[in-house]
Image 1 (cartoon, rainbow, N blue to C red):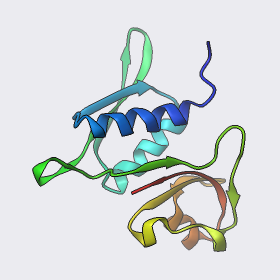
Image 2: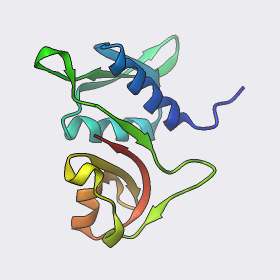
Image 3: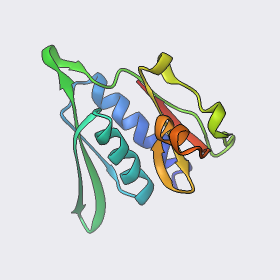
Image 4: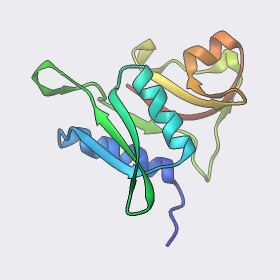
Length: 132
């Protein structure tokens, strides 16, 4: 059976791996997932991102980042826009996550970016997720 929401699957894999204190999480790769992973790496939530071939299929391998004492950098991740309910915002209405301590990830006409970048460039888009 085909997966109806691959981004929710990605976020669930990350959430479960962080809870189990895994160093690496793997998932089927796509261009959108790779861009989200790039933004997470750029914001300091991931140590690294790899795109590899495994069994003839592209796989995205994320290296999770932890602070001293095994405290995960990712304490929460929430899917906002879903296939059944898309959430679009204009640039003045981009939400601040956890009073600025978290990040909203949006897909815009200029690509996938954080809410802060989107606000600075004055472009809105679809809110994919919140991460803190």
